[in-house]
Length: 321
Image (cartoon, rainbow, N blue to C red; front, side, top):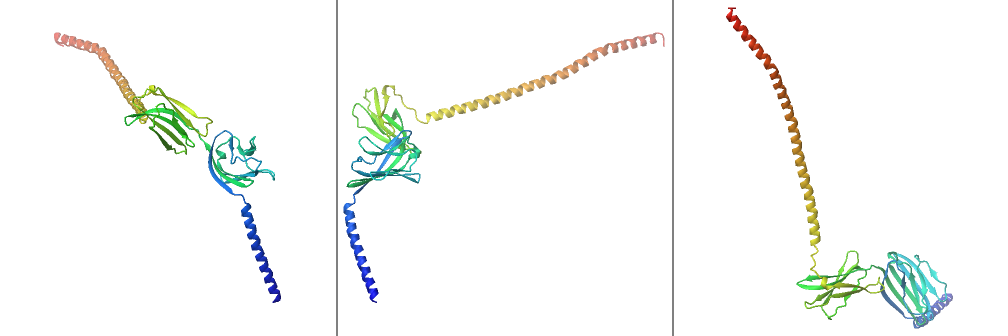
């Protein structure tokens, strides 16, 4: 009994001490734990070019470590550098951590492509703070830039189009008269790309010869521009005109082939009938000619027999035979 009381007292002392220690330790840990700032971003990079991803502008002078956790197609890999521990890298594709001349760390991806798309989580611990940046990395698809003039509702518009870009491009007009009648239209394509258009209303009294369309996109190093010549304007045909013309042309070709084939077969049948008729007419004519010739050959003999018989009959009557 005495032994049990001693054990119970020891147990209570241990539990109370543990609670006290944990409370003090927890309070001390919370006071010294650096605050973590979490950010989310989306980054696009051109295919075939090197990609550099930075999650902080801190230098190694006040940095303890950087850790990159990369998830691509459900597979994780890790790249880390620390002031105390050796570097670690089990990622493929040539991904490495590099430093700028100022000592800022960044992730380098050579020849970026679709195979590098994924979620890149960067964790940086600094003296007095920590940061975590979650970056969704995607391949950029450059758009096709074009300009045109259209007529809609009895009004003219200059249209600047950046078609099939990923992400959506930014388009605008460098127009001269400061018109505020500009609208943007966005179209989501089935392949995940976006077509952006800027529609600028053209006033009837406008004397401008040309307009400049300007577009920017993550896959381009600089802005791209396209010139629209206004004096070359002609009403744009509806989009259905071209398919209808092509369809009618194909139909005319098919009908022509059918008609020519029918006419050829018809003439061939007539020619065959003519040949058959000629062959048949040659047969009877030859037979009739042969029969006529035989009649002509027989008729002199018959005439001679008739004449002989007549003489014989006359002599018999004369001599009373």
